[in-house]
Length: 121
Image (cartoon, rainbow, N blue to C red; front, side, top):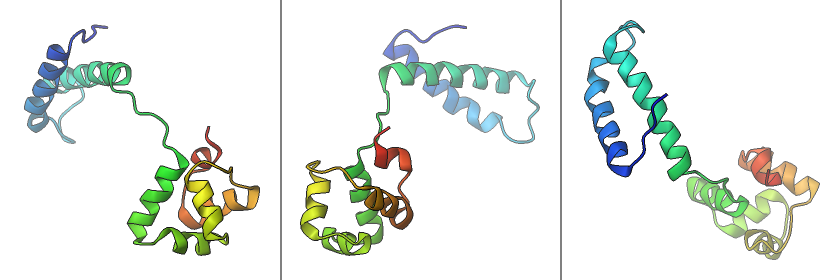
């Protein structure tokens, strides 16, 4: 399959995808030329982005901060929700401690954080 080899080609592919979007949809058959072109361009763009714009794994502290923002809670309020002291929460947020089994479980259940993020895998 063809590859996108430069930033200019990447930008051109994104522009062409924008042009094709109105021409494709649920009712357009999979063998439509516009749909085929769109599929190929999307695959090429995805490959380029995976190499040049990789998305790293989220850090636990960053996900906790996101949950604090989403729920409009302070670090102290999150600590109480999780059943730990504010000082332990601070240590967790600054990477000075790893969560225990019980804390890991609470992070998953009470804050809806994926186990892979809590475990750092």
